[in-house]
Image (cartoon, rainbow, N blue to C red; front, side, top):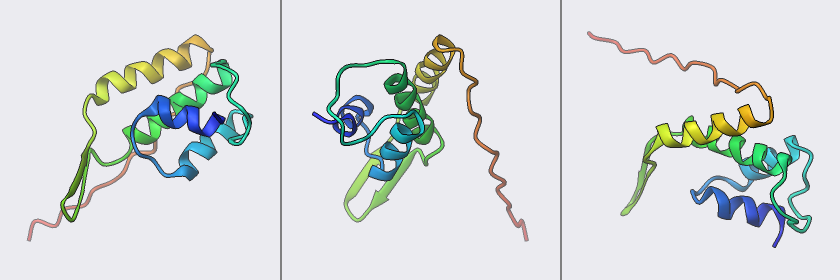
Length: 103
């Protein structure tokens, strides 16, 4: 099993391969290397993937297929605990402005 396969299995939600690979690379891991167990870099990559999920839409529908992400508070708590465990600053996503024209 590669690092990429292990991270996908741990996250359990569909993300683009590029998101998984970016998280691994950012933490100094190679996606194609053999997974040797969870260490700080792997756990931080996992937390980074959780942040990607948290900033994604809560539900996506296309055709007859639907994916819904529940438990965002629990996921945020998991990511925060991992960042705290390793003394890392929790990256906060930039706010997104939503403009509504009332007329």
